[in-house]
View 1 (tube, rainbow, N blue to C red):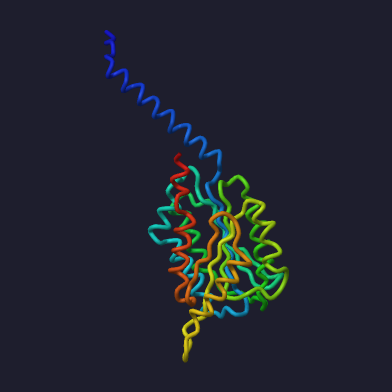
View 2 (spheres, rainbow, N blue to C red):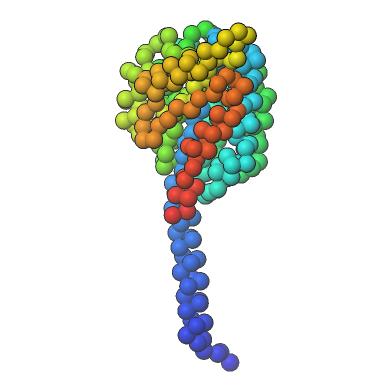
Length: 250
């Protein structure tokens, strides 16, 4: 014998069906979008970066990627994950990919990326700081991820460009392609005598702000020496990833 549903039961069933339909549509849209953000990290390994500073930079990035707030933001929406890649840059013809495009959809994938970075050894890099070349190359990598909702290039650097095209001559064209460039400016380590670090990093930050960054809400993050790189990178990643996980669910 089939019992008729009362009004409350019918209403509850309709609400349940509607909720299931909305969730299904949201997941389908997220999956179709491929990723909510493509994030390319360009690390400065030019002649001004010694072996100790190189290690601080790589280990600092690993620390930042595994900070609880960053992990939570990266894994907040597995149906629309963040695509991540890491490359090194120095002279005009000296760049190297450390981590190819990787969809960060689970903790295991993030662990593999971290292990790769932690195990990377310093290679011989040519002297010179070809910042404009690094920006152009990073934009080319991001053009491989055109289906992502947002595309961001992060450039870490401890000095001004001295080889290749000027950053100001390439940033406008990159911004016109819908790519945002943010910067992590690294100041000098603590000197043995005297301390001009604050003024020096102020000058370098102004240079990157005027010559490098572009796009909506683009910003410059600073690290007062390579010892502060992990903290600065953590703050930058948290700011870049903030809000995108919520957007993925709307």
